[in-house]
Length: 279
Image (cartoon, rainbow, N blue to C red; front, side, top):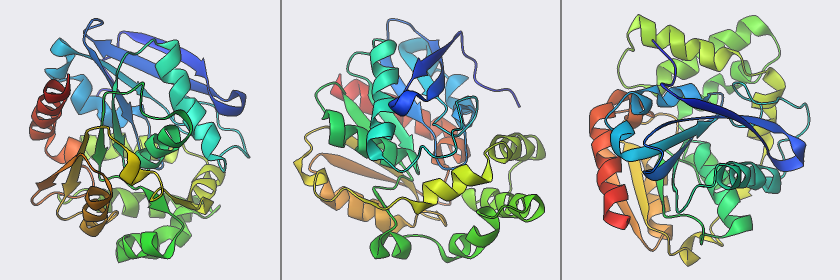
């Protein structure tokens, strides 16, 4: 399993001075697509988009969130929404991306809403929420989280490396509705394993709700969600759809938390159609 088929790599400075690693590929003159990964992941989860026909028409950009992948991993730099907002703004600004479409998976949805809260929506063209969260650390958010995922958090967020690895393995298994091929499984396991425990803990300590800004947004939203998602339950996608004025909700049957990986061909086609419709 290869990583991103990228042609350029950058380091940009995000919120609080944190250095973020960014890669891009595809058509440099195409509509920019900015991919934002989820909790405990990295830019490499978008490998099936960076090796697809999307490269012909679009400029694909993916970066490692703070604390993940090749980006810096400060010990105490995860609580402020403004930092996360400035991270995404730094990527958009320094790469001079015009009217980009933001694609946020899982925790990546929170990063997008952090950005929208502090910078507004004028600079973006659209948003694709993929199994994505818009709230965290609230009773409602807990009710929208799968019970099996809730049960493994003690291991996943612990300091003991043996238990943490067991938690990561269980988490990765829950992400897909089917058993991943060994090559894909171990590739993603490596991606997950390099995130320090203190980063996982800090991300889960945040308390966020975006119900105050969501109904005000005029940006087109595509909501992509697996019917068998055991991490972010389907009811959360319904909630997100109800809060956004211009949202289309697409369900993926027999699919878990990773529609872009489990049904990559369909995902890529629908993303292309969505971007084309709003250009």
